Length: 439
Picture 1 (cartoon, rainbow, N blue to C red):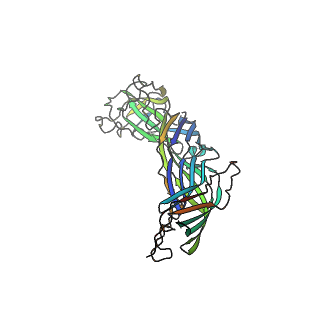
Picture 2: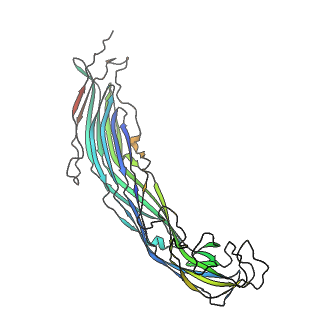
Picture 3: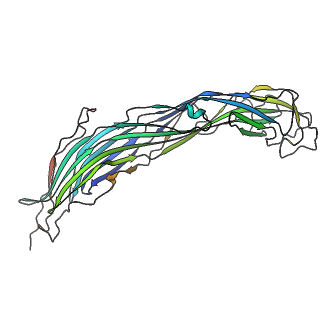
């Protein structure tokens, strides 16, 4: 029985904004998006079935009779990942009173450096298949730059009320991990019918027998239903091998900005400094996104055993089950039958699941991720610079009406890109406002 199937899942992306950090009025922000790559899971190979104890003509059957069908798996399979992609834009931003502005630090697209294929064969052929994982990752451009900012109150002359310096080293990374957990069930669908070379019908007395350890055992008395047979009547005991493959697939993608930040400041004559060592300033994750597909494989041929109903002790046919404790029949022979195609009086039992009608080439979309964000850039130290001087201090009542931002270091250029990873701006914003006079 062939076990070829393929499914491809496409994922929606996630986006979010974080920051500014370390201060709400002066710091580094980031907005980013990440889109997981497509995942493709394919299986091949086949499973061999053999009737291990096919009964000879004349064999007497009773409620203790058991048929055994052996099976030997021969799976192949693979998990293939597409390239995960993303985009990140990070800026120095400030918002002090009525003044606000930004200076771009980095604005780049990202993608993973490979699209690997991972073997699933060993897991599919194992008795209890373990999960198989795969991952892709990529590092993008980085930048290192320093900024100095001064906030002043200006009328005819300017008085610097606050100043700050930030040194930022920022990297970019993107990754995606995927895990496939296959569950394979081997079994036989058994049904009985009074017609020769019968097609399957959902109304036939039937049962599904699950195999283990290479053997599928089906008890002759294990069927439910009632054919109201009479002594001497022939019925057919039909055995159709099945393989069910359930694939549980989870995937998650993440974009991260590893960064280190140093800061020093002087606000209204009070100075200080802070240092944030290398860690993820910001991470954007899709969260775990999963899908599950189930495919049932049937063979076109099945075993069919004609049996003559000849109970040696007969006191009326049970309406609960076909087989009673008495001897019930004599095997007339064993032959293989071929199921007619759908539309000609029967056919294969129906499959179920999102890929039931097309086990090869099934494609569907997975909704976008949950935009899970993290990293120390999510913290906020509150404002650093008051927009106006408190009434009890020097320059009481003065308000910031000029902000000057300068770069104090050149950016590092990632040699892999061959170009600058960011745009640097140097500017002064000024709003002329009247200075309050002391009374």
